Length: 226
Image (cartoon, rainbow, N blue to C red):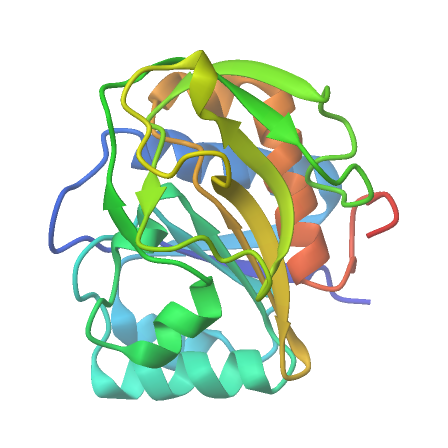
């Protein structure tokens, strides 16, 4: 049996996160540890050619308009045909003029306060991305606000506790991690992952592993029930 294959796409045409190389390295390490191969690319044509047969595609802090029409068509066909999509952090700052992508992701980034410590409240421990996390996880990140809460359209896994940091703009309902099914495909999003240091954190790496294994249908690793 061939090992599962994951495409990590990190093209940017707007703000570029310094943590992208650390994220790619983390996914490669996870692949070596859990038996899946990783192809890292910033070429939209690679999505057209490389998505068929892949277990999941990761948009790793992409930003701006990063896809041409062929890559858009390939991504949509892939997900609606049963593929897995994972959005990490600035993936929510991507393809603003493509409504389908907004639906796939679940919400659009609007703003963030200064990077600072805060608390993530885990709402759902029944998913492999959050099963290992404490109910209140303190970490330092860039606490994204979104245009609207996706609750009701997605399965919310964890939310920001705005009482634990300064400058939050969404109030009591502030999801940061969620997932949903799209046709026969699956979409997972985490707003975490701004800092390079995050990708060296074993808890965050397991969070990413749980997201990608769930999106890919649990084809590798040892995901908890989801």
